[in-house]
Image (cartoon, rainbow, N blue to C red; front, side, top):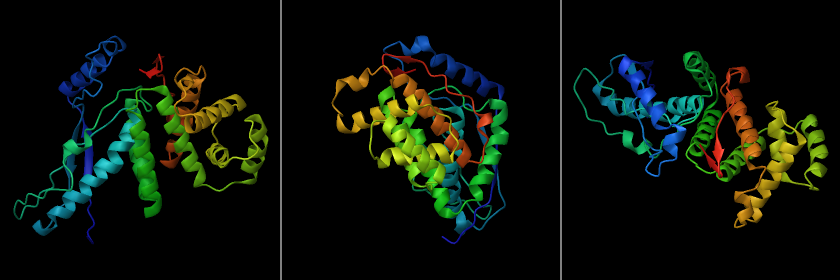
Length: 293
């Protein structure tokens, strides 16, 4: 649309919003999750977004509404979702010109983003979110268009996983993310050597899937053990080639693989956003009968 939209946003809280945050945490407590009537999609307003921007011609209203809201919904909200390990939604912002009011309907409404809401342990402490968000947006803005689109899709895929209730579903999705990001980085000599070492450990002669996973592990400097890689690789193959095998649901190594893969993806996304892994808190999900609580 040949338009550049510039605006400044500030996330703020009030006493009643902090109260809503506490009530939401209590609602999603472990005890409540054992209630058949528990609604895991329950949401609450826990923040307010204040936006300031220079005045603009009324004819550019659609450009402001579309570009501004796409940025909020596809970049800012998913980054906050990653930080808080739960679905964060930002309502549709109404950018308005002083010339005259134009009701510009964007290609979506706020409700389109509310497909489901999960609740998990924080990845970034609340007091660190402002600094981390500014750093992540600065890193994102410095990327080329193609790389920005890749980061948005990476956050989108991660966001999808937050809604999956079963461990085996999350393990499949997390491995696919690691494979995908590994396929987009180059195989260094170190990665080639590590692949050659891990192939016999995993009982394979060659494997592009393992190759991509190893490329990601080496590229992002992710810590791992041979057993973690082997079991994750085995579960990945079972889910592809023995999709209807019920043993997948109760494999004893599933929880460990889930924690390992989740930690890897967390740190890889942090690197993509220009953040140090030091700022991340490891996930502390509880697993009961193959469900992530």
